[in-house]
Length: 464
Ligand SMILES: Cc1ncc(COP(=O)(O)O)c(C=O)c1O
Image 1 (cartoon, protein in one colour):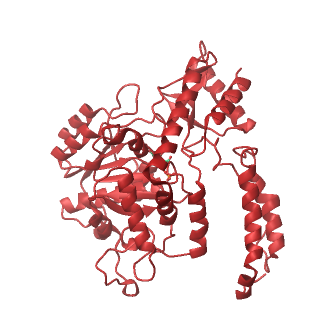
Image 2: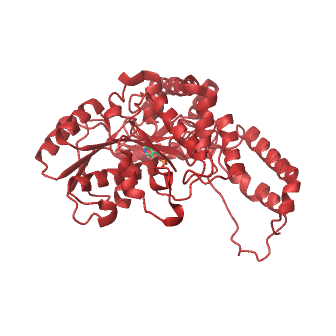
Image 3: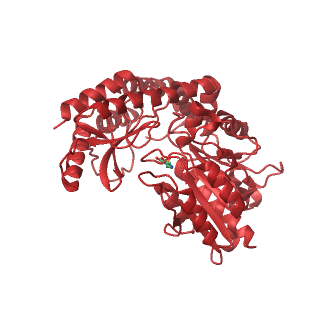
């Protein structure tokens, strides 16, 4: 078939299809398996003439939808997965209806919506006005901007405009303890090198930076520019680096500090500015992911920095047809993409609709019910809680008393596979202190005590 303008006269037909698919998908979520482990898509060549709308819908209904995960549901506990709230879902549907290109000012209010959403994100976390930034595709996108700003900062210290000249003569040393894999990827993408960071010791039995070791290493370093990459919520242990101590060292050393707070920054909503993220406002840049605990649909992170001129130095490439007379940097000059989705709208509407306390409520709820499950695991003779649960992540394994490390790993993987096969939960593996572990992370706005009971039933039925 071919699209024609007359298709819009049949808008109702499209909306009917949309309504019926959406309604069924959302109402079936609870009874569907959380993750679909075995999927299949028939290989076939591209067709010359396409097919009719009804056939497309049948294809979707028969071959695609039954094989999708219930990632937006309340028991998809792998990775760190949010599920879009009703208002964020509505907003994201409308993003496609509106189809704005949020690249530059001058043709739509969408850029102003993004700026306001970024401001509100700062207010959500009690961050000062000195922070500004840009929305990205997610945590990885933010960490890449963090690496790029750090790179530009380092170059400026040495009279090298890295964006223009490259990293060839850059003298830089990067320090980190437990960077997320996306941070390591970002060091590679920014030309700094995935392996080119100095590993600072972790405090024994944790993923937390040993600050005394950082101070020692930085003191010994004669690099012309120094960068520290800290974590506010590591993905496995949910550990937070001591940002107060680290910011003090960075100040003395004139170093750049990037903090990955993809989901950990949300802890601030519960414990305030004196909690685990104390002094994060002194960092130079921060990663925060909205498609995690803010529960907006995928494709949304916010990169925040107190030095947004470094984004502009890194990403602005003048082009006559894209010139701007406003004096305000366009988003396309502050980040990777030229053409950009209106990903700010779900964030803007979420914060408008639910406010700070609405978001706080589901974050608090997730923390409380995670603790319920962690306590149950801790008390059970059949399972071992491997690390104290401080936020929304639990590390555990089956009771492995008297088993060798290999046997313990095999038993843990077996349980994990059985849980995912059962389908009432979907969970992901982890590595902790050299051993296989099961890791669950609860970041969905609708997960409640009944889901914890389901998890207890699943674990009880699958114990060996
Ligand atoms: C701490 C941390 N940083 C970065 C990321 C990467 O985020 P994304 O998957 O949105 O790119 C994650 C994802 O789990 C994370 O937990």
